[in-house]
Image (tube, rainbow, N blue to C red; front, side, top):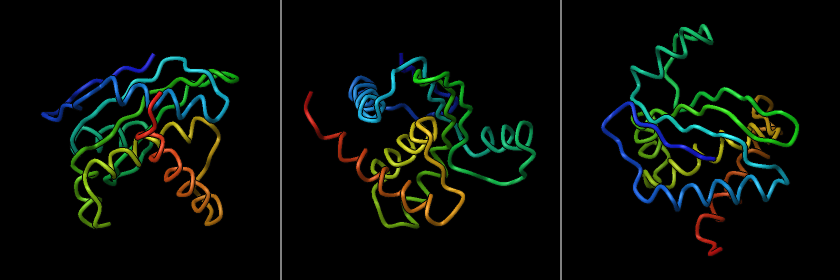
Length: 139
C-alpha cells in the first residue's frame, strides 16, 4: 500500500497515477510492495527531522526511513517540496520531473541502491532516469 500524506500546502495531483507508478518501480526491481508512506512537507519540517533523527543541521530534499524486510519494501519517505522546487530550478528541469526523481530515489534506496560513492551515484542516476520513464507506461 502506498499512502500520501501532506504536512504543507502541497497536494499531489493524480495520486492513483503516482501510486501505480511506484508499484511498477518496485515490481520492476523484483520486490513486493509493503507499506510506503510519502510525506510531503516544507524545508522547516524536514530540517527538524534531519536534526532530530540524523543529527544533520542541513536542508535536504528527501529523508527516507527504511523498514524493508526481505523482498517486502516498506518505509517512510519525507520530501521537502521547497527543496524539490529549488533543485528543479538549479538543474533546469520541471518541478514534476524533479519530484518524480526524488520519489523514485527513495524507493530505489529501499531496493538496495546506494549513492555515497561516485560509481554508486552514477548507477542511482541511471536507475532514476529508467524509473521516471516508467511513469508514462500504460498498465
